[in-house]
Image (cartoon, rainbow, N blue to C red):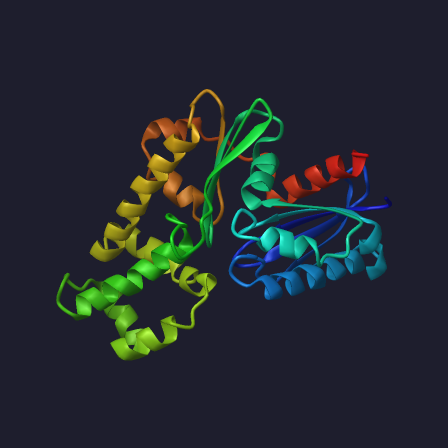
Length: 287
């Protein structure tokens, strides 16, 4: 084994790092979405292409992937048979595919016991105690991902239609969104083709509108904040243990939580890609 490779893949994009067996990173690259439950073939193509880019950045030939020990922390790895199907089609010498929650936890809190909440395009929670990792959430956009950019983006479109029908009052944000799409029919037509990342693209507007006092944005954020709080409790929140909130919406929701959560939160040691490299190093050391 000459090199190790760490991969962090989610609904918005993937990142790949190529490193020496000791963990020293030689090259990195960013690529397209890699949630294997959303689109397995596209995720595989993006992972391979981004790996080649990372090898190029390290000054290495693409064939070196064939001799590498690689850990992939991927959204959707806990669902269906996607993990097994992807494992069978990857070129790496040694491969482990795990949930992005586990790589995120390892990157954020190192070897300590504790929990993480990761809220980006999707959402997931991880816990480690005595070396044992457990997960809550990560069930995907259709039935899960509360507190995620995709879910709050979907919810504002839903509330926009409710407001159009006179079921709830319009707010400035729902009026703006309806104007963006011209008609409810066009909103529906476009949304039918949206991937989670497309819904997630609406999240910054919702967060900003909530801060400005928009009633519909506030209602969405309040609902998801309560689910985030209950999810942290369900995964084993303990203010005496390591605790990090991560992802594009991690800090946003942390600031909405009661002070006992805010006071317990720590700055992460690193990110999910760091965690994947750490685990790839450990994989490379196993017989």
